[in-house]
Image (cartoon, rainbow, N blue to C red; front, top):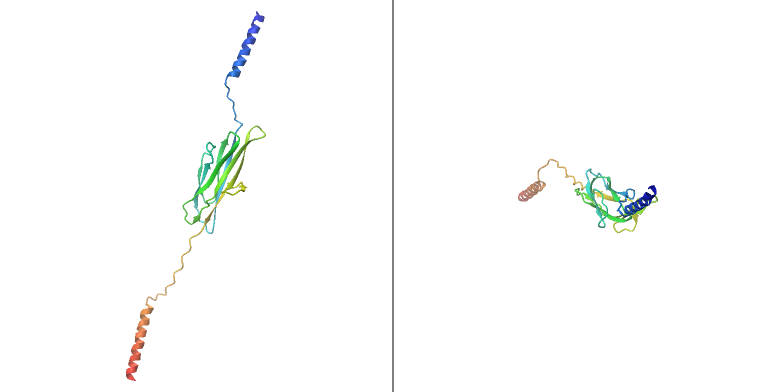
Length: 195
């Protein structure tokens, strides 16, 4: 009876194996991701720069479907470096973004109006995972840079001209000059009569 069961068991194992291959299976790609952070720096130059020079950095996708950081707009004050990210990538490719600065509220500051085009190139690495390469190009410049920097310029308002010091003499010189001239004319007239 043992021999009669064996062919049946073999058929059953064969059918179970075929059935397992036909069932959809979930493939986990936990290691096939990478993250990237994109730093941006704001500096303020000039003499006697006050504290509280504010602006906002804005991060915009260059194409639909790009992964985005949790915060795409970051308020900055004075000299500050911020990071857009982490941004998680699950497929190789080139992902493009733009970063620019919105003006703040300090009127004496000339805000940097540069726009950076940022490319995140996601490639396969040696460990069957992904890695990101990041570079930026400012405005329409052709030179790549790894620094995204906005330089704002503070120009202190001109100092008012100092007022002329008053001597305390509130008499009007034109009035007294006119009286002196009138006195001289009267004296000249009297002299003519005497003479």
